[in-house]
Image 1 (cartoon, one colour):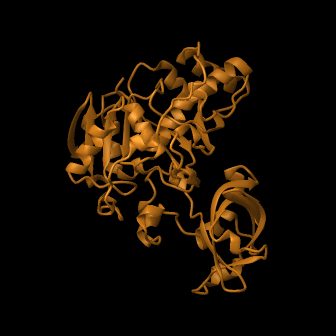
Image 2 (cartoon, helix red, strand yellow; image 1 turned 135 degrees about the horizontal axis):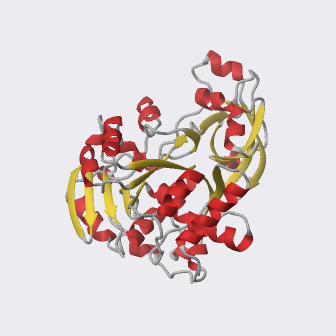
Image 3 (tube, helix red, strand yellow; image 1 turned 30 degrees about the vertical axis):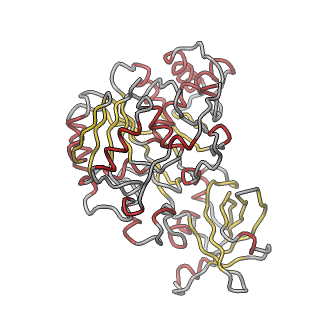
Length: 403
């Protein structure tokens, strides 16, 4: 049954001065809040390795943020901002970034009412010769409620990945209330980012340095990755009073067969770095159920975890995914998830969570509440009282799951 949750119950006062507008000079010098069984303390992030159980399994999201924000101009001079969300044609990220000539994306279009269907040219105030040679243009194909399908075309034969690198900017969160700056190109990206596709960073990973990662490895902790491409839905507030009326957007995930086989053993603590890793890992149970009941994996629906009692064990579910992949000679599971994790959710995989501090009345705060057994206010009151920095460039926390 879908839980009756009022988003107003997950509100707190976040003064603007507590929002970190810029990253600290050293990634690992941020504060670290520690929460376990109702007890809260603090440290510094560079010390996180000593708080992690030896021989545990730590899972990172290795998605890479793309410069998905593009600024165009109408012949009238009006500016139109286009924010690329998800590829349409080609619809696979790898193929999309390699394509040349033209492509189509689902986009959020600023000032879309001022776009009368004419062809837009990229705004190039510096007359950059490389950008000029690309001659990037945009045509509005279809409006679809909050989003639109936009066709991009360009002339110099470059792959679309290079077009974005040259013409786009990193889409930093709107609550920073500033334009993208050069520092964001490096710091709004994890050190281990590999696969292009996100329009927002998995920000829990921004604190990790090579030194911290090496110290974690020296403790016998197995570092593994998943990939969830973060969509712009992560910026969308819950506008309805009842959370059940909020719509989660689909996000693509990739999980390797080797990781699923490691999870099958599940004989050691699992540490998720970031809420995106949690959502990916906890989606696996329901994907496995589909393999058991339908013979193949498919997307996880938003409210699927709450729709009925499931008779299958975690082992049976993960084994079903592994068997499907092996039978089809696949090394990776590629599927989508719309899962929402709210109080009442049954966690089956993740034991510990590394995460930042999230916006009031957000789906991410609901996830935190579910993970710590409803005790989110203890954590956030402590953080506010002890000068922790909030949101994407803010400080970090290590949370132990609580029943």
